[in-house]
Figure 1 (cartoon, rainbow, N blue to C red):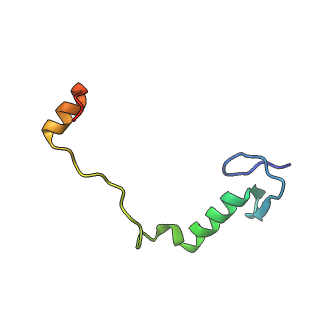
Figure 2: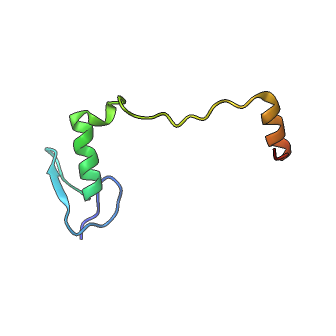
Length: 70
């Protein structure tokens, strides 16, 4: 069982790629991620939802630092 070139996990069904010098084996997940990167799909941010939380006020940060619960 070969190891994945990217993440190092052992895989029973590797996806092999020859880059001109060496043959590299990728697991299913890393192979799919590599294909998306090559197609440019991972760079698209349209339609993604931001998970940023609103900034706390200075008083809320002080209460959080002191451990005071609301």
